[in-house]
Structures are given as structure tokens and as C-alpha cells.
Image (cartoon, rainbow, N blue to C red; front, top):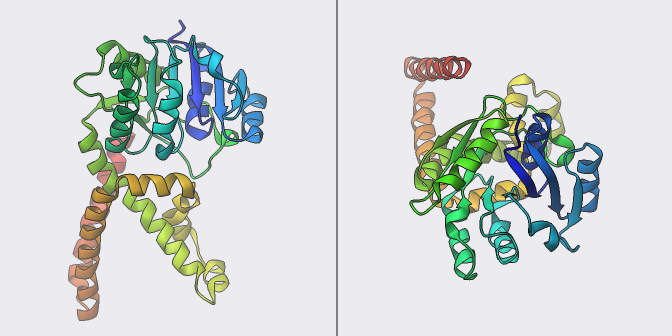
Length: 299
């Protein structure tokens, strides 16, 4: 396969960035891959797994590596993106594409705009916001694997001023990793993922933390089965990353949380009244919707 990315620079070589590099390497679709991150131990894991070819911590001198970068992937927590952009925009070539993998988009776009506005020579049109919808509850380079993006969605949220060829570069990169790409505005992205991603994570963290705080927590966890395991799997995800995501998208998340609480209140009333028919009707609708969703995914 031809090279779709010449030199790839990844900030944050964890599950997301590392799996992207592995997928591109497996297809011979990338030249050099350089990893830049906070901890040497994680970067060493990435080197041993052949995820990256060279590694630098953020405190080391990595500026020269950026001077011939083709694509820069920011796969860090979203709160770090603005600071990183301000550090790299005066170094990367004007035709390089910078993209991110953040789970929120409006805040990332705003952060990117502020960073680009502070660097007169940088072209905001070469920044392509994106969000790969893939992951596990594990983090770090050791969690990365080649097939993470197979048949997964990647949402790309370009703006009116984004260069079409920059968008195509990012789309081609993710499609080469095995993903399906789709476009939507940043605002729509954040509304949707507040409901289907951010709220479920909030609920999983809340349930586990509430149970863990009980005096008899050990007994509860001892008797937890597969239902509890499946529902709370995502509570094993990175707290730092999900803190940033929830705060960045807090308005949309608060709206979804309000809707969910209102719905729970309705179910509470039905429980108090012993209204089995109403409860069963709700569960039937939910069960059918879940089956249709699974059917659509399989298709």
C-alpha cells in the first residue's frame, strides 16, 4: 500500500494514538512515527511494541522532529490541546495537517482558534477536528492494538474554512486504519455524544463510587455478577481523560443528565405505585430498541 502519511507525530501515545500508528504500520501506510508524551516509561512501552520509531518526553528537545511533519495527531486529554498547539504551531510546516482525537469538539475548536490566532504564520485551515469512536477501559501504549479501528466510526467535524485536502488527508488516514468516517458539525457531535457516551460514563463512575463508599462495600462487590461487570466496565477508564471530557461538554451533559433524572423519577413513581404494566412496557421498548441497535451494528 502507498504511504498515506509520510511522517506522523503523535502527542499522547496511548490506546488511541498508539492503535492508529499500529494500524498504519501494519498496512505499510506510514513512514516515520514519532511519539511525544509525558512519561518515559509509557514511551518505552511504545518503542518496545514498535508503535513508534523515536520517542521524546515533553521536557526533551523534539522541535526538530516537527519541521518535516506530514500529520500531527493530538491524542491527549482535551484540556491539553490548546497548550500543545501554542508550542508547535510556529514549528510545523505550513502544509502539515494537525488533527485531534478528542471526545468533545466545540471546546477543541475554540481552543484551536485561540492558539492559531496567537501565531500569525499558522493556517487554521490546516486543523481538522476529529473523534475516533473506539476504545476500551484500558489506557497507555501497552493497551494499543492494531485492529482497534476496524469497522469503527470516526467523526470528522471540519469548519467552513477547513481546507478540503486537509480533511481528505485525515479521512484517508482513518479509513486506512479500517474505520468508517462521517462528517457532522461540532455542535451536533457534542449533543449526540453527551447522550450516548458521556452520560453512560458518568453513570458508571457514579454507581461504582457510591457502592465503594459504603461500609459493607466489600460484600457488595463480592456478590456482583456479569450484569454489574458489563454496566460498569467503562468506570475503569482514565479519570483524568473523563474529567476533562465531562467539564468540556458540561452544558450538553447537564441537559442529558436532567432528562435522565426526569425519566428515573417517572420509573420511581411506577415502582412506588407497584405499576408493573408500566414498568414492563418501558422495558419492552428499551429491549426492542437495544436489539435494533445491535442489528444495525452487525449489518
